[in-house]
Length: 86
View 1 (cartoon, one colour):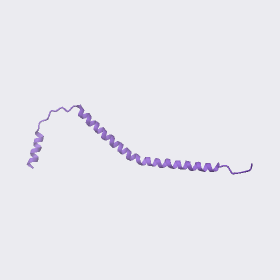
View 2: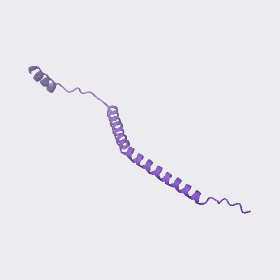
View 3: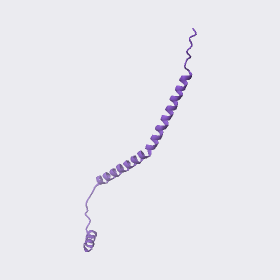
C-alpha cells in the first residue's frame, strides 16, 4: 500500500516535460479517428443494406418471372393455326 501511495505522490509532484509535440501529431490522430469513424459507418451501412438488397433482388426476380410468364401466355395466344386450306 505504501508503494502505491509513494508512486501516486511521485506522479503528482513530477515537473511538466515542456516538450513540443507539433501539429503533425494532432492531424495524425484526427485522420485516424476519421478513418475509424468511416469504417464503422460503412460496416453499419452494409449490415443495414444486406436485407434490403436481398428483398429488392427477390422483387426483381418475381417481376421478371411474371413478365416472362406473360410473354409465354401472349405467344401461345398469337400462335397461328395449322390450316391446310390452300
